[in-house]
Length: 533
Image (cartoon, rainbow, N blue to C red; front, side, top):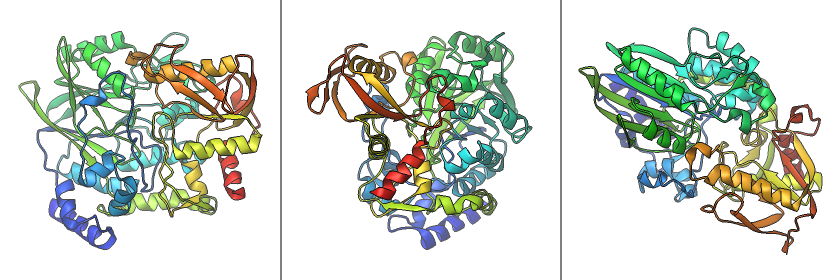
């Protein structure tokens, strides 16, 4: 498809399917992106198996203990404000429509690569998890979708929750000779042998480009250890530095880290590891419209993060001359499904994957009266619904729900379907729990989670938002040290005693043996709760 044909198709899509805020002229402005250099990388991350267009409300604000997020300048007006912020979300959602969807994403990527025929498409992980069909097929649907999309290289995080054997199986079958899995920081637990290649050196227009993979460092802590019991992870900063130095000595003209560390960890790493030109980051789902410069002893590393849920493509055009980076242009390209026509081949694949499950997926459960969203440091309306369902099902006094960042948004008037429930619960260890917990242990749990989120050293931040809580109230002081952040814990308005025992419902336990539980999965608990509501 030529640029002219593409822009004509965009105009037709806007005129036929766009809402009042979608105009053909915007398609030209957003998607007629001419190359700005001789080497290009396209970057996706944290798609969380969302094959269909969806709404995704960004967090209204984040507590920033590192100061890094304060560096980001987010747009205040127009379609990019809708894509990158929570401001006027309901109004803008109705104006601009849904985002993402792999059929629309495929159209955009084909257009971008038509002008950049030797470019690479990189995926930063969290691709295979987050939907019903990914759960039912144990990641097979998303592995196949990534091949069809043209992904060249990927790294890992939630993929590992299907178990190490399944990850290796898909890497050696569906992805073989098509998508290269890189992870410099995954080693065998016995002899510290590499499980995956650490890097890949590709020739792009005569330029040696080194891509290094960095999987989520805390996978065995964030998820049941038994899923990856034969692997170790970690940040492995020293090993990364040695690898970058070696690649430079071997003639790499540009070095890029494809990272699932999280934005704050990437910023710290960029200040300490010399020789990286760019870190294309993921995990924290931050939609960052610009590349941020970080100084280190060897020069400057530029850090990006390409959002989540298939809402964006990070487009990096580099000017490499004289054996080094001379300049670049980075753009966070939004995927407006009303503006981008669906790619027929990808749409056909999506229809095929979903067909056996449509009766269950389309099951209506309730009608939305207020926006259901997940993102936020401390709460989200989807999470509150899950908490209410847990307490109702287990007749519990208190409920905990993990501070997961993934999941789609629904706006008032939408019908909640079973698919929507899966979109916020679909994990391989979704069994619910009911546990008697003493007051002092509840405080310890909250302190530990708060430290993961608010520790001033990014290398001790293990991802996620604060655990969601129902049945209790508490005060949190994010800028205090561990042990001093959580205070004034109350149950039914009264101070919670250290020895007071409460029945606590939850789900997604990472305790040893949790995978063998016969308790009902959380998606069934939420389904039944909505049916009774």
